[in-house]
Image 1: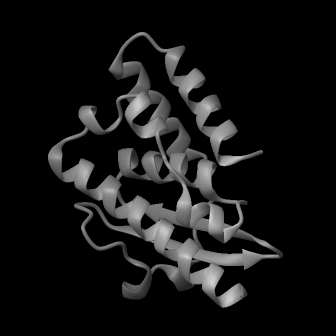
Image 2: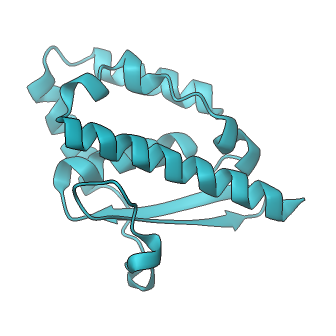
Length: 140
């Protein structure tokens, strides 16, 4: 499935909920289903800078696509990174680097986060895109 198709699925999923309390509960549930990152990657090198919570992110090539794994010490943040992984994991590195993640605005996520969490969201997206760009360069 393409990045655009996955984003459209997420937008449809969020449209199902009538208020933001339900949407937060859904995000928390997504975080609970996040496959845990290997403990060897829970180190300073994999920590995303700019997040209020501790968020570890690892990326590796799996054939011609990137696979992400992550974890966080905060339940909402874990759900947010799970959403981003749902969109970007399993995609070619070039597509990740160039992705327009419009679903974030369309579901109203950034405006319903505290300023520090919104900054963390931007940092997570930036780090995932940097991995995509770096892995694309390595693959060439």
